[in-house]
Length: 324
Image 1 (cartoon, rainbow, N blue to C red):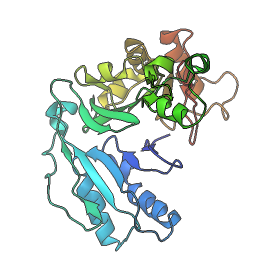
Image 2 (cartoon, helix red, strand yellow):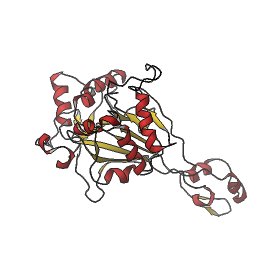
Image 3 (cartoon, rainbow, N blue to C red):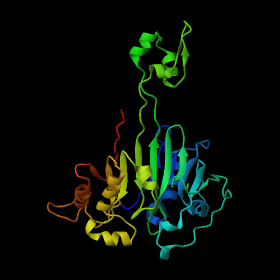
Image 4 (cartoon, one colour):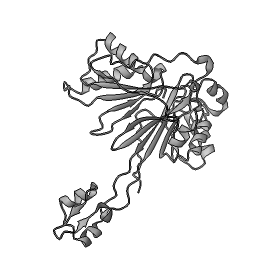
């Protein structure tokens, strides 16, 4: 578990439409051009496709464009790169280099200009996506180079129709049900207007997932605010608690550090990821061994008590129940 890519299929058929890159260390983004090529090959020859939107730190746009140019790659879909401009307090001063040049020009016919996104100083976050389904924001993390975390929040959805109220009000089954469900009032044959709030139950509260890239902590209070009450919090835990000083020195976290942040945010479930290769997966560890990922899980649970802690695995699928 050395790499973390974030893919979100926002609309139909679980097709990848947005990709989020946490930071520009090679193990976290060198595979992106290959991924784009794979998606292109699997998409057939259609050229009128929705663009894939890519979000990441400044410098990502130039990297992708140059890679596509040098390899003479032609994708069957357009892509757009939105760059987040970090702040100077996201990495050690001695590691700080001048941020890559931000080129506002459109470099390629296949690439839209994309946005250059600055920190919203009032909210201490970056506004990335706000559509009919989701709100996605980024927050600053401290690492050897600027790194980001992401908060994905599902918007409220209309509640279920109250069948008994519909019957009592004389609303006939059919198209009227659909209109009311979609927030549209209907007028009955007797002239009575029925509003959605008359027949809809309470709205369904959206779910929240938060993902932290490589880090030894958050910068400012933006991360805590955005991750508060998260249904699922994914946090790196590269080294065990006995090596906390070493982890911090290299811009990483331990299970205890991750669990403390989860507790501070009142997150409902913590998922640990990005383990050093020195830790054996549970499936390969022998009974009694303390150098496996099982020990990392215990260390996080010692902070969170009975709260569930999950060890991430490649291709793991975690279901998040719809709130009632």
